[in-house]
Length: 131
Image 1 (cartoon, rainbow, N blue to C red):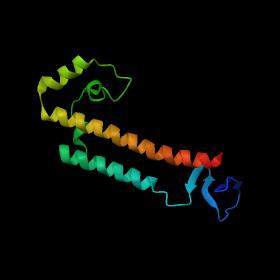
Image 2 (cartoon, rainbow, N blue to C red):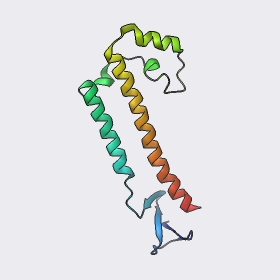
Image 3 (cartoon, one colour):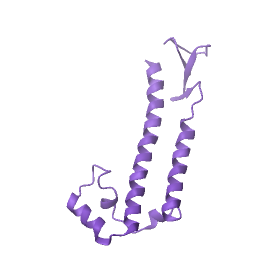
């Protein structure tokens, strides 16, 4: 069943001049320019551009032989690694490649957080109108 959420807080089954969100098939549409999809695509594009700049291609960081415990240490709470072990790994090769990889995965984590924030704000806006 389709439902329209109006600015006055009263929901209707038919659109009015005051509707701001529309619920259909368990999805929400925003009456105004909902550009969350465009923002998501731009963030993905930005991630690809950073990978191209650092590694020459988006595929390269995923084809490198990496230890996920080191790459995601400090980003993923599920991965336990001591500060000393992490520093030992980083300093073992003193490689520019290691630092690029760490930068890229930290950057990816930040972009992912932004993507989640954009989607969550859209969801919260629509749920705010719902209640």
